[in-house]
Amino acid sequence: GLGAYFGVFDGHGGVQCADFVAKNLHRRIVGALRGGREAAPDAGPPTQAEVENALEDGFIQLDKNFLQIASRQLINAGSTAVVALYCGSGPGDLSMYIANLGDSRAVLCRGGKAVRLSEDHKPSRRDERNRIEKAGGIVAQVQGIWRVTREAFTERDRRERVWLAVSRAFGNVRLKDPNPLVINTPEIRVEPVGEDDLFMVMCCDGIWDVMSDQEVIDLAGEHWGDPNEAAAAVVRTALQKGSQDNLTAQVIQYAWQSDHAKDMIAKWLETEAQRKKEVEELEEDIDMFS
Image (cartoon, rainbow, N blue to C red; front, side):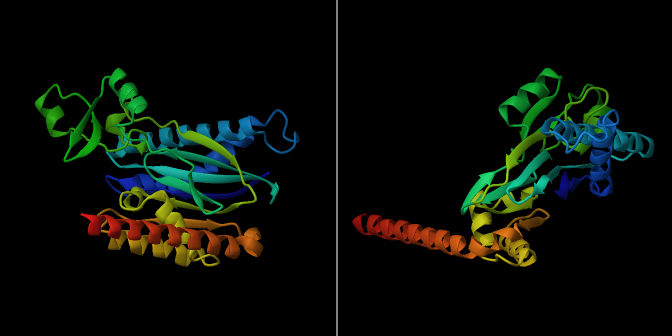
């Protein structure tokens, strides 16, 4: 059945949308799942299709709820989202459902390697740009960042123009009404939890802007057994690397892997250290040769 649920929500234009989504999204997802099973409530564990439909319906319905509030109260805030929902009877029979809007990202540690579980929704992504332009929107670089906006037909349009660096998100009423340029349909990925899967990291873009997927996985792996410290180390490192954005990291460790996790992590960190040493020696040889 349904198990643990985790999420990261990165607000923009105010905190109202991110707060609303963080407090209510899981309720909408569960409500959508129950609503879809009313005809057969005792049909056993939900199917993959039922869970995927509940995730999509939950995202879309919650966004409609927020947009109604935002229109009445003149709120222009929005939020990204990346959530993980675990389903199954336990280790060996567990799948994770990853759903996302925007550029907050989920990355899995599988045998020491980073496996990206979500794809960022950026206006520069070819499929996203095509969709936006077909809907009448504009995609352009502003201060070095690709953004989406509406055409400005009047002076007021130009004054109130909104430029957004993500192509899917909750909220952002000005980019959804009357025609949605930024959409609320999540991309969903289903992944079985395997025997080499040790933990997952979920972060907002302030982390990923300055750290690679593998860098985050390596750093979090050094703190196996203490997910709070692992997350704190990721945030500290992103800050040291000069990230100017807000920083959120969440590390979900699979405790049932404890018996062999430390050995596996030690081996991959040793291998990575050896690889870095070889690269440094090669660079020294090149410098000397130059």
